[in-house]
Image 1 (cartoon, one colour):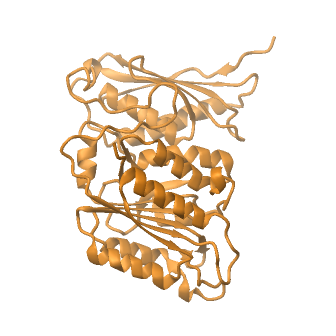
Image 2: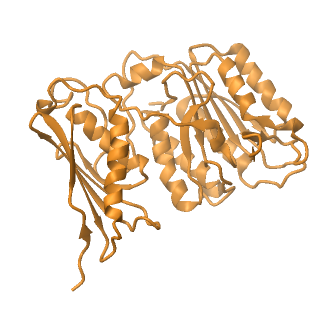
Image 3: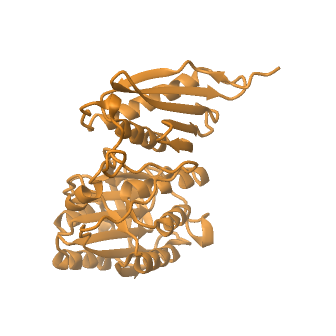
Length: 383
């Protein structure tokens, strides 16, 4: 009879942070590793997930148990590989899990009494939100009373009809759909540039620089060609008047960074559906949604980018309703949100469907040298 699976001996570690902080961090670790969340129950202290199929893992089943033990919070992780297939990869899953978990917990203050911590909800406060059981999505947060999220603006750029470069199929229709959902569901004031030149894009950014204030939020969505100059270590957006042989009409990441630093909006997010868009990013520390999270994030300056891929080409089609795969996932995440969604939560909703349906891996990070100060972009759905 064939074995039902090979189980690694459970690995255990103990932490001084509160039970709720450890549990929330464990759930977020599953998302960051790209595993498929099957169950998340804070009351039971149980998280179950499966790893994606690839050369290193084979749809392994991972079980995480979070318990209060002897004045600390203990985390036990077990990885079970499919029938008769292991090759020691189950143990690698456990190592990866604890590595990411401890990176997140490094910024969380120890609790006064972790072993008896009942969680903020049971003490009369507001508990950090965790994904509901049976879903892999980070839930929307309720809109807290008394928080001024400010005004929302969006510059939406979609370029199909290049004069000297290969034509794209979905960039303009993606841009129109993004503008519509931002206007109707979130109340953004949008400006859409279709088949825009370098001059038109830079003039639009200058206009935002001249009129936005600390009470404003700005989202810039770009769908079009991108290019990576490997020798100069520089990424570029290619407007409609760009040519392959001359960079005079290209827009460099350095130019975008300078523009974003000069714009006074408190929160700014770039959403880039273009090849090599990950060149804008650097690592962003995961934030745990502790009580008062939205209030703190709303006060802090943010310059972040959600890129459809890293340093690789990205797909121009293949998504639902004639959109790119990335645009389709982005639109679905925006439409599904019923409260407040931060940029990291948006990323967690977009990442998996894009990875499953393409060879690209979305990235989310702060923009280098653009004045990021620990905030995040907040999408506030209309009631």
